[in-house]
Length: 567
Image 1 (cartoon, rainbow, N blue to C red):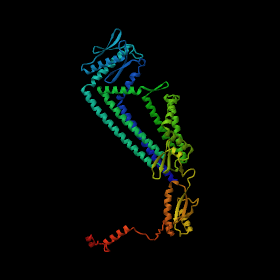
Image 2: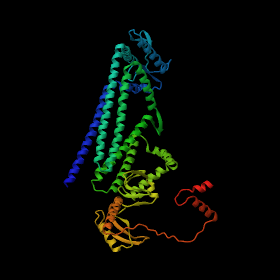
Image 3: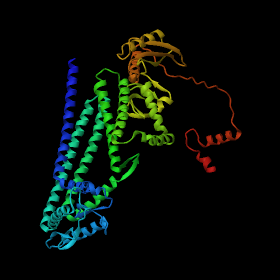
Image 4: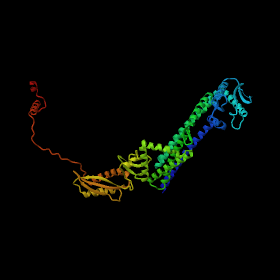
């Protein structure tokens, strides 16, 4: 009991320390991003102004033909079409005059006059804009709207001239260098925090003996890497937007690129029923779906490792409950998410039909493995923790997934096997319904050995091994007479089939030592070779050749010189 309390307290401290580090990491990232957003709020305001200019005027939103007056990439206000010109033509003429005015070094003066009972805005005594009732926002008259725009134009033009001065450019250059240095510092700090969190996750893996804990850690690492990438990207994007927002020329480019991106991502690309969805809507929906899947996996792993394991449930039922819980959460969450998103579930029938056709043609293996996974979970012919043999693979079932089953071999190598293979081919499950297994160990001895002595020796070896069960009793079978040995089999029972190869090896070591001590001979195969004698003859040609060769080489081994000379 004290050992359990010590282990539990150690695990609790590790989990608390890991949780504290994760909490500190998340808080640090949130504070860093909040500080950066607060510092770089003008860059965000640029994006907000471009979209707000299109949504804050209810009257203008009802007019199809509208255009925005822009100065140095900063949207000022929207105007409507007149009787003579369209909104785009009016805005283009106004933008040209504003650019010409700010590029000159002369003071800029914006005045408001009334001509033909209509308010007219003058720029350096030149006609700039005649404000009509169509241009006025809701709740304003044409005169009030003209007065408001006159002040806005005067402030914007004065600021534009100031931003073109050399002193301002030098000051903003220093600010740009400082912002880049700040972004680089935040980039490095985020990397340091990521490394610290990775170390804590590694310690969590090493201190955890539950597969669910490892799954939680792997999922957390994936989320952490994704969060790090998004945060770093956001830091540099906002820094670049802030720098480009400080200079008139780059602000124009930034506004044009931003306008193109906003129009591309907000334009409707998909219609389901009466609802229209843009690229942004689809990306948000996809992100929410991925978050739902990751959250369901994390919740399932926590339930499996923190609730089911403490409840004393076996590993197989734990895996089955976890899989059912995961897919239930994903299904219910997806339906609720689509309904809240405004998507009519009945409109998915077309998508379901297309998916059915895809399954029929190209996704047969995926559907087959998925269905096989459901059969394995509910029928439970194999469970997590079982020692099985599938073809040439032997190992312990670690996890039964949606499409594949993870098998951990005796060499601690993970093999991913399709679920359909467990239903289509023969599978040996050593742990199915009863983990007790009997092992057969063959032994051969010499013919001169007493069989009773062999039986006694092998029985003693089996009974003295701690991993061999006392009940059922070990047995020794006399299986037959071999060519050169008497053949026996030692039958022992074990409760852990995954250690059967280790048990066989240990018993073989002990059997060899016991037989040697009892002076029982272990024979090896012997074969007798009998050669029959008889008369055989040579051909005359071969006999004469052998006689000549023997005459050339006398008994001393030296060639006969006289014969060689005569030759």
